Length: 409
Image (cartoon, rainbow, N blue to C red):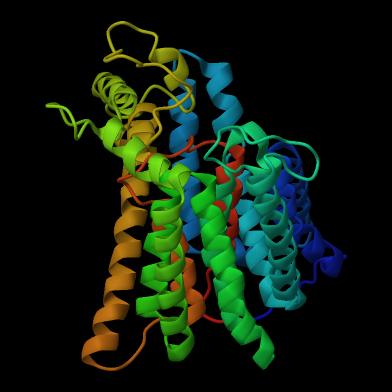
């Protein structure tokens, strides 16, 4: 039900929220600044109008509990000030998600704003990414960081694939609820294939895994569009197979490099790579010494320098490159329970929908909701490498997905 308390400049606020999608391409500073300003604006609005409806839900209460735990963890860490910079204002992520939810209830234009924001951003990245792949540099002169890895405007950050694969489920959710012309429906698979291939060209193995997981889950779980789903599946298999067979750079990046990293040609099998295994073991040792509340958010970079924890050939970086091990090391079992709980909740929801669909020929989730659950699923998927759990860029991704969750739109 829409709120009776109206946010001032609601149309402008909706548009600014949708700008988060292209702003993410610019780097972490501008989208985080925008998120912080909009969150503060919404919080002030709620306090002045005594409006707390959105805050009175179990999911936000759980999130606040998590925020309290990570703040306590920071206060007890060896690097209080540095850790608090990350944990103290983490709640802004939840407030921004509530703002998105409020806007969907009160201004349906936001759905179109986000949809076309995705279209615009993806189209720019597609044009620029393919240009960079074939010309060796993008339209503003950013050269290929590596011969087999397209990065477009992200430059040496090499997160083009991460951005596309993590935001794609939300884009698909918006597509399913939008009123579409027939030409849009038939052009859409081609647009998606161009995105899929660009993710492959980005050379990020974790992002390719996210793409495959989300692509096949959505194809299996959604209803309607049967012919388009079959066409999209066939087109994806043919195009990706052709790329892997004909492109030595792609084959070397995904196949040969993976075999070498895991050590399939050697006697000892590694978990992802010797470097990653070293980081994982170091994170585990930090957790064992700080089992309840961890060492404090974003303190892995300091604790890994301790010889008591450091293991393997490369025990120290800014984070251990896995959400679950980072949360264990930096927030202990207290923070870990929230992350693993989200994973099981997502798994249960998707499996329940699938079983009811198969055995009772009924659906418990709309196509819109399925896409959002799949987006959450790949976010909390445990068996992969990740960026830092407390990075601004990824936190904004979480808040967008959570903000769009709802029973109806």
